[in-house]
Image 1 (spheres, helix red, strand yellow):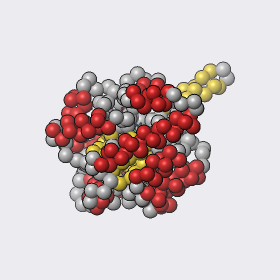
Image 2 (cartoon, protein in one colour):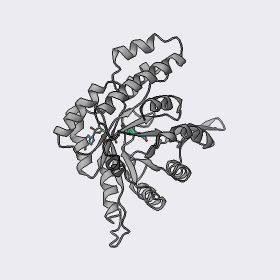
Image 3 (tube, protein in one colour):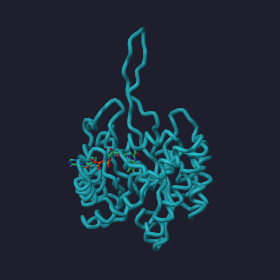
Image 4 (cartoon, protein in one colour):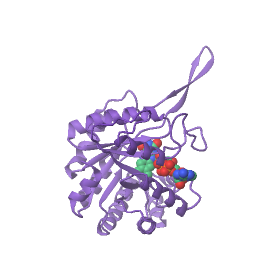
Length: 317
Ligand SMILES: Cc1cc2nc3c(=O)[nH]c(=O)nc-3n(C[C@H](O)[C@H](O)[C@H](O)COP(=O)(O)OP(=O)(O)OC[C@H]3O[C@@H](n4cnc5c(N)ncnc54)[C@H](O)[C@@H]3O)c2cc1C
């Protein structure tokens, strides 16, 4: 079922969903299952599976280094198929501009169609590790809007190099990213909202936000988005702080603010076990307030570990 259909069917009751990352190449999928199993009792209508950017690796040969390109966590569509089969749940692959040509994207979407995957999340992707700014891949899209348009066109039978008159009737439900504290490269929140509106006008059906720790930022963002004419569901994406290092890492990587009370509470922790508990408690309070405000769904960034998400979900769903 499509995300928008799940939301409609829930008739105002907030739903629970989460995002996982594929295992590192060479690792067994069992660890992933072990982390997903405890979350299935909360009836997620769908699970998101991220896609990782490719990276450069340097391989030594006879004293010289060869630069090769590799993807450390491949298998997004395969994992979507495996989870769909094992848990009978909708799965949502993240489709990226960066690292993929438009043709590769088309083939991935065809795979999704055959697998009965009805939703995709269309994202630009971040810059590669060695890059300061995102550089589009040769033959790929520069912004997520282009990707949304490609997916929408494909649903109408307009493939990249041919139009198929009587293409089979399928229609992806498309999610895109939104940033309550603006995207790190955007010059202003209004600019970023205009770009978000372009993604929706190009055919996106719903928005999932970047993580935030201060609900007032999310509420203000939703208000601004509605005034800008963005009328699709806006799903808050949230994450419990799990280690002390997050105090520096999250603002650095995502350019988000952490509220002073949270910073002080984490800072006072003697070890990461205590930090994990503070993160859980903060996230429960955040989730309760969001739920009361009537959000359609709470989407959790699990980063592959589920004990804290289970503790949070047990209080809410
Ligand atoms: C819910 C969620 C899931 C994610 N999943 C993944 C994942 O699986 N893998 C991964 O690598 N990353 C993921 N990301 C991170 C995401 O790829 C990065 O945040 C990326 O830097 C931006 O992606 P986007 O789709 O928002 O880009 P875009 O919407 O293309 O925006 C990127 C920037 O360009 C600006 N912009 C957009 N259009 C234009 C235009 N026409 N002209 C000028 N500027 C423009 C925007 O304001 C913004 O600053 C995820 C993020 C979120 C919120």
